[in-house]
Length: 145
Image 1 (cartoon, rainbow, N blue to C red):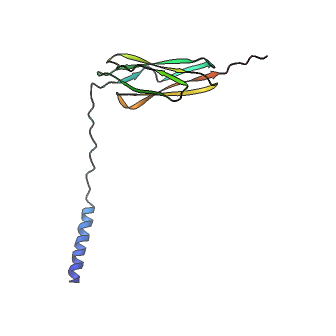
Image 2: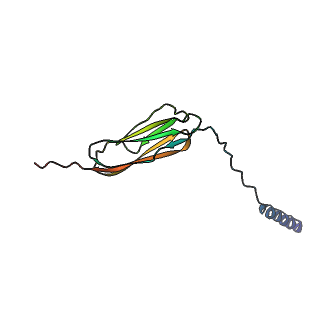
């Protein structure tokens, strides 16, 4: 009986080892269907360099957004990296071949170099587009009394 039990145990062990060595097929990645008519967001520029600007004098940059797709493009959100930058943009759909502007106004309250970002999310892509404004605010000269 012992020999039969050991024999069955060896067979079971061998069976387990043989089956453990067989390769399993990796899961196939999901195929995404690409819409050939989808909207396509194209900016005229990604960075606007203001250069030197005087302290306390707001400066604006315009970023032109064009829909190069066939379906309407929607700006789902546009957010500045801080409260020192005011944004203006249209909430209306941008039709195929049409454009709109995103205006970013920096308040220039603090002296020194700055780099601020504007994160724009559209229905064209799940990945947001990051625009940038930068420059140097020159401090006001104090009047000697």
